[in-house]
Structures are given as structure tokens and as C-alpha cells.
Image 1 (tube, rainbow, N blue to C red):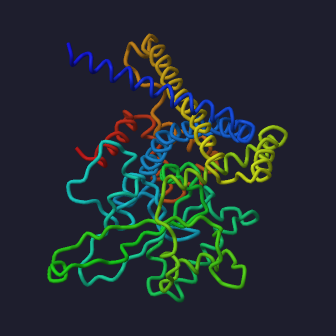
Image 2: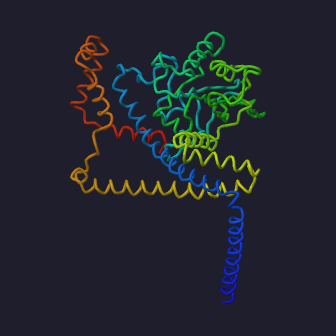
Image 3: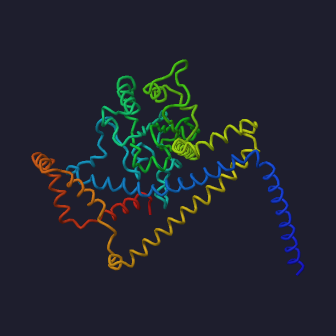
Length: 429
């Protein structure tokens, strides 16, 4: 009984102490409200906006992953016998391998995972942790670059070409002439509809840099003939660069790319390593900037008033402003994010419940047509009779057209199962 009394006394004393602290915070809040009122209101609104936005971007990622894998399975129908999937064949405009498969991107650029590494989350396959480069003790430093284009089809429209896409092509041509490795240590990704860009939080244009430098070798490794697993470090260079790479002049798009990717360049050493938080923050600032331009008389005006008022009272960067800003932002972001998440769970539960009660659900039929078959049927639908006749006149075209038409008529489609099997094989048993 005495122990119970002591416990109750401690709880009662702790509660009294907590109430005093909360009361102190309440007094401080009311005293500083005239100074931080605009900041609190703006941060609360921004939190509500970004909480929902962050949830929506997370919600898109599974759909992007499925779409990327379905595209790969669809293009399997267009390869030659014993040939390679057309998506994996280097072609114009860059004639380097485009990374389509989010499950094998690391192997495609020459990166491996430690032996025994596995995960039950397919998204972790895209993360930049546990990345290693297999090398020997005498191997030189390794560098690899991935260009992230902001366009789905770079340089497809010459009248409206992206200057960064053009600069990247010029960079590859320059490397073919002046660099020993030429363009062999380059790949590219088109960010629209890309799962990798989404989960990396990079919109493009940007350059991703992978390296195992600085190399660290102990005496045992120097004497050993066994392969060494060097940790790989990743850096993101969003384009255009914020700082000058050529002192005293404003560099062109090509000069910016060349300066950071040259084999003798050390510019990458001055750049911070990949930070998902920093990139999410950068995307969030872009979202807010667009909304401020879209609503100049409400959110835009409040942002300007808050900025001028904070500078007027000289409180910019002080705890007097920053602490209320953080608490107000969290007060808006957390309910917005988790509210959106649980509302999505509820909506999905209702859809599944209605489907289970439908005739299709009772017969355990799949929802909608097979995605691979649907894409192939869409391919046939856009072909005119003249197009089909033109395809049939060539050996390869006629063979592909005949295979697709027969497959759509006779095949018992299992595209969903093939995609799930690919994911299970990638994440491991």
C-alpha cells in the first residue's frame, strides 16, 4: 500500500508540474502573439497544405511503380526472338541506357548490395542506403552519373526542346571527343511518371553523382586478392546550379554540366551528400511558391505581410519567431497528413466492401482488364489500316503485329501476377 501511495504521489506531483509548464507556455504565447501572429497563421496554413501534399505524393508512388513495371512487361512483346527488351536498348537522342526498371536500377549502374541484404519493402530498393561498389585494392576511384530529365521524351520536339536536354546531348558528344571513358559512365531517366524520381524527390533537370571515393584501404585489403565492397556516396546537383562553377562569368547550360562531370573535376567534393529531407523541403517550397502565385490576394499577400512584419520587428531567425513557426506548422501538417491518410484508408475500405458484394467480387474476378493486355490493345487501336499494312511489309514488324494480335485473342493473361512475381524476386525471400 505504501508503494502505491508513493506512486500516486509522484503522478500527482508530476501532473501539477506539467500544468505549471503548460500555463507558462500559455502566458508566453499570449505575450508574444502580437509579434508572431502572422507567422503562426501562415505556418498553420502551410502545414495544412503540405501535409496533404506529402500524403498525395506518397500515394502516387505505388501507382508509378506498377505503371513502370507494366510498361516493361508490355514491351517484352515487341522484342525480337532471343532479343532484348526494346526499352533497355540505347537509342536516340542520347544512345545510352535509359533506366526504366526501378527494381534493378542499382545493378544497371554497377552498384551492389551486401551479401544477405534483403527487404520486405519494394520502396527500399530505390533508397540510397546500403549501396556498395565491388572493386579490387588496386582499382581506381569510380564515378557514375545519371541525368534526370524533366521531360518524358527529351528532344522529341525540336521546336520546343529543353535547353538542359540539349546541353546533356552536347556533354555526351564532348566526352566522346575528350574523355577516356566517353559516355560509358552515364545513364538517364525521364522523370515524368518515374517511380525512381518520385521516391528520390527529384523533379529534374538534375544530375545524380555516384562515387566510392574517397577510397579507404587497410593493410589487410591491400594484400588480399578478394573483391572489396566500397561504400557508394550519392550527391544530387539540381540544375541550374545555385553557385557559380566558373569564377567571373555566368556559365551556359553545357558549361555547368561539363564543369561538374569532368574526370578531373573536384567540384563534387564541395557538395553535400544526398539528403531526402533537404529535397522534400525544396519540393515543398516550390509547391508553396506556385500557390502564392496562384492566389496572390490571399496566401501570397499573407506571405508578404509576414515577411515584412518579421523584418520590421527584427525578429527574423530568433526563437521568438522560429519556435511558434515550428509548432504552428506541425499543428497543421500532422492532422492534415494523417487525416488524409486515414480518409484514404476509409475510401479504399468502402470500395473493397462494395466490390466484395458485387457479382464480380463474389466470383473472385479481377477488377478491370489485365493491364498488359490493355496497353497492347491500346497500341493496336491507334494503328490505322495503313499503319498495320506498313508493319506487315517488314519481317520484324509483321512478326510483332502477328504476335500481339494472336496474344490478345488466345492468351490467358496474367500480367498482374508477373508484376508481383518480379517484385517478390527483387525484394528476396
